[in-house]
Length: 228
View: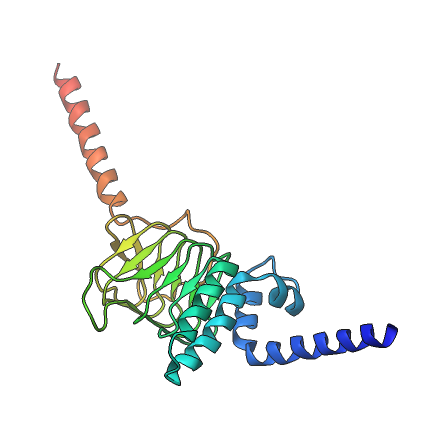
């Protein structure tokens, strides 16, 4: 009995070690991006985003081997377990971090670069029934906030930030922030957007104009009152 238990423990440790090496970029990304992550073991056992990526890498390999049915079935198994749906034909670079992940959908022709962070409820989807390339291209070092929808065959430039619940249907240049519905662009003066858990304090490009209009209205009201 003791030998059997020892054998199971050794096998478990070996599996964890192998998986941590194969998915070292994903594990490192989770550890760097999430302050709640305390160890490699915790990430491998409890992070649904990492689990979904493990399922995806296997399904994607089988898809490239042109094995019918099984890759899609495996992606659905992953969806049942993790709440994250990734089509096996999607192309995903290194160190993708899916935080929490529930409700994330990544479509068939989506292309994701390196060091991308995606939060819960994000959809990288299409806009119709057209064939061919119909899902977005996400550049390197992009952060997509919770609930954001990036739709259609568009490109999100490197180092960009998509704000929470934004709806993006047009190309986004590099080093930009997108907020609102539909998504509105704020340039970031060429600065790289840092991965952050703060989805609240994102600069809205319309707010300065609204403030100026408000100030102008107040000035006109004072002139009218002084005139009386």
